Amino acid sequence: MARAIRVVVLGSGSWGTTVAALSARNTPTLVWSRNEETAREISTEHRNRRYLGERPLPESLRATSDLVEAAHEADVLVVGVPSDAVRETLEPIADELRAWVPVVSLVKGLEPGTRLRPTQVMAECLPGHPVGLLAGPNLAGEIADGMAAAAVVAMQDDAVAAALQPLFATPRFRVYRNTDVLGCELGGILKNIVAIAAGMAEGLSVGDNTRAMVLSRGLAEMTRLGEAMGASPRTFAGLTGMGDLIATCMSPSSRNRRVGEALARGMTIEEAVDALGQVAEGVKTAPTVLELAREYGVEMPIAAEVAAVVTGQRTPTDVYRGLRRVAPGDEEDIV
Ligand SMILES: NC(=O)C1=CN([C@@H]2O[C@H](COP(=O)(O)OP(=O)(O)OC[C@H]3O[C@@H](n4cnc5c(N)ncnc54)[C@H](O)[C@@H]3O)[C@@H](O)[C@H]2O)C=CC1
Ligand SMILES: O=C(CO)COP(=O)(O)O
Image (cartoon, rainbow, N blue to C red; front, top):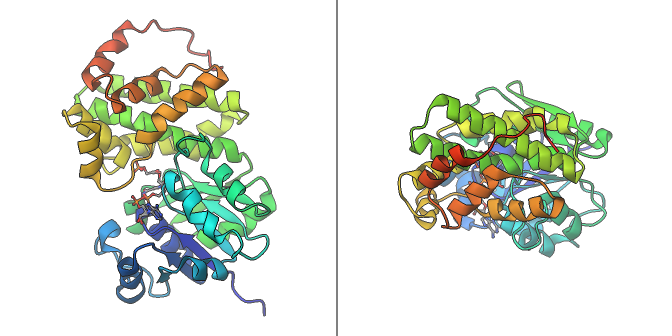
């Protein structure tokens, strides 16, 4: 009998640990933490208290703080560190992985400086490995609590996606497939910026119509950039686009939304990020996305406003007051 596929998850934050817990229900799974104490806590106490409180993790989930040991074990490699840590995490293990180990990104930000998407960074660091991602409306705490949710595994090769599906799926976690890796990845990255705008709306107590306007025009500009970059616009109407946008903008537990709320209540960006103590990818991604929008000749007014706030050039109140000054164009004018 063939041995079971071994999944290795790099990163033991809220989402890396949660995905590792899903996978551990299906197949042997090891999670790598840069923090030795966290690795011990996961292996022996079946908890990751800093990120997931007292939620129990499967007893079969093992953890290590040895990156090379983790790489040697992987039949499938899942990357769950923040976008600015992907390269430094993967470069040391490029020669430690077996040939053709599929790499699955969980990361929803752009690499600062290079403007590369996480799957592009992964392909650069680990040439010869198929690279794709798992994304969707997946707030870690709810999934760790066993609430029903769905995600998409996106790989260029649908046969690889089909082989990965059952590793992450559980009766309460449906995993769909998509071959539009670019569209699925951009959805997860771009919605974080709109979630900061939605958080500001919450903090300023704007009306529900205003919130709906921000979400729908946010989705329009996400789709516009995606299509200009070569993604299918249909992807943005699915789980990784509209689905993730709705979850993140509506949920009080979204870190990006919480940053927006904190800014609207008068905190500086540094205070808001410090108070969070976890990653909110939209903060660093907003200015980088604007550079991409300029490169592709696409208008992204909401991202521009969010970038102006997170870089300290405008206040949330100015931004929402400024909505009145924007002349509306043709709603269908997507590209
Ligand atoms: N938490 C969630 O609900 C979801 C998060 N994501 C994405 O998953 C990615 C990871 O986020 P979370 O787990 O939520 O973050 P987190 O803030 O909960 O944890 C980040 C983890 O990365 C580790 N880390 C930070 N810098 C590192 C470095 N330089 N080298 C190695 N490890 C490092 C931290 O020690 C921690 O274990 C992000 O891109 C996020 O947008 C995607 C879907 C859902
Ligand atoms: O990506 C997420 C949900 O799908 C998590 O969003 P936050 O990073 O804003 O918490």
